[in-house]
Amino acid sequence: MEVALRTEKRAACFAFWLVTALGAQPLEFAVRHDHRWRDRPGILRIAPEGISYQEASAKKPSQHRWSWAWHEIQQLYLSEDRLTILSYQDNLWQLGADRRYSFLRAGGPPFSRAYPLLRQQMDQRLVVALADDSQPCLWEVPVKLQGRLRGSHGVLRVSEDTIVYRSDRRGQSRTWRYTDIDNLTSSGPFELTIVTFERSLWHYGGRRLFQFQLKQPLDPERYNELWLRWQQRAKGLRLLGRAVGP
Image 1 (cartoon, rainbow, N blue to C red):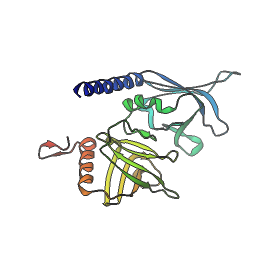
Image 2 (cartoon, rainbow, N blue to C red):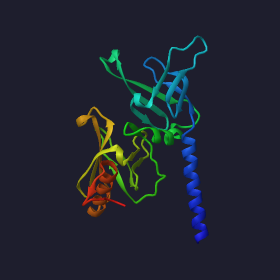
Image 3 (cartoon, rainbow, N blue to C red):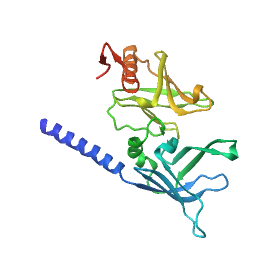
Image 4 (cartoon, helix red, strand yellow):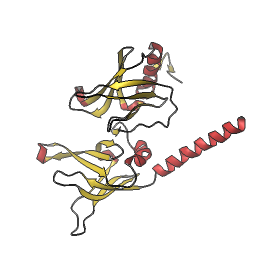
């Protein structure tokens, strides 16, 4: 039994080391720049120092060539098939709105391959539209995520380091580190609201609200433990001179 546990532990450590090592290596993706007039093929490169894009043009030297250091990215949206960079540059064609650069995967590996590197390099400005189930689950509950016109169904999973919403509907899944969450509230056993730093034009202060209807009741003690865990990791809460949580 002990031998099996040690073997399992070594395997877990090796897997963590492998993901970390791969995440530190530059990655290249064949993409299409989602342009207003037409998509443009090119190569998107994600490296420890930042992100760059080079358009592929056989006729003439391309004018579409950009690079961003991490501090130049206002928000980065990551899903399996789309990566969008919101920069700090003004877009004169949109009355000074911040300029977005959106890239679609054009074959090859999904953008989720870059998740370990991006997780290391970016703070709350990273929006992970993926369900990372790699962390041991403490508990989960089936839910419906409310939407303006249409909601989505899935499962909300809580771990020591993350809260994950997994849904089969495209673009709805999310993975939040506790530091990615601005507020966490509940008005009853069948409701949970998570306020994130993801930008939104529809909610207060630009924050985005994720309002979940729970299909099973959430025990008050379990909610209190979740709230304290979030407070400890995201807000540095200390109670009676001692840190809250494990």
